[in-house]
Length: 242
Image (cartoon, rainbow, N blue to C red; front, top):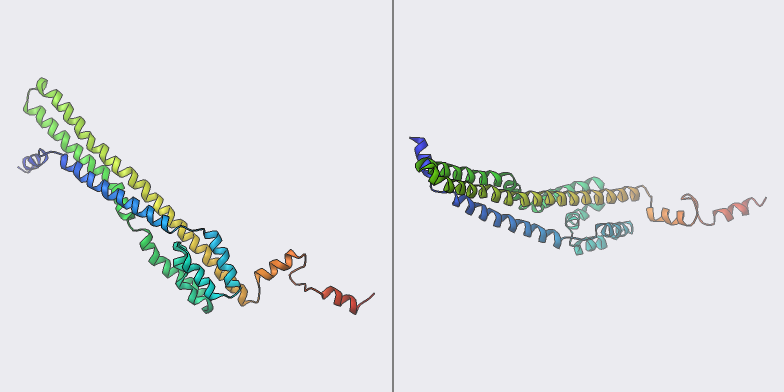
């Protein structure tokens, strides 16, 4: 009794499965376009931004550093802006704030990726379901009619049923590719934020210890050792003329 009822449902056709796949493909394409536009709008030269930020922080220009990050369109800058208020509180406080802001930003970065991942995993099965329904209909026609007369119709029905599997794969493959690209971009952004944070905290620790990377670089470029001071050699000669 149950099999007969399920057979009646299956005989209604598999075209509705194709309509579902078509609707899912529209949502998938929309999510891809939205994510592409989001990452396009928030692109920036992170290496240049980091160099300028470190230069301002080394000069202890906190307001300039906040303004630089505020003018940047990058996600990395939006994560670091709230953390700049903790620069004077120490490296640990700044790192904790960056991590908290990164958790919030990740929710926005991964928006739409759940849909793409779900479609990539399940669209082939939806298409396969439509194929199974089509094969059931084809064999039902074969059993209800003369084999010689129904064979052409059955083969055509099976070929039509296989289209559902093809459409399912057509929806799934781009969704999987887009999902992997989004995850790669999110990983790159998190890596940039981590690198920038480590560079800023390293500068903070150096300044707390009385070390200036820019001064050391200038002295090294002039041919002097970092511990040497200009004029020290002349003073030594004056004290010890021989």
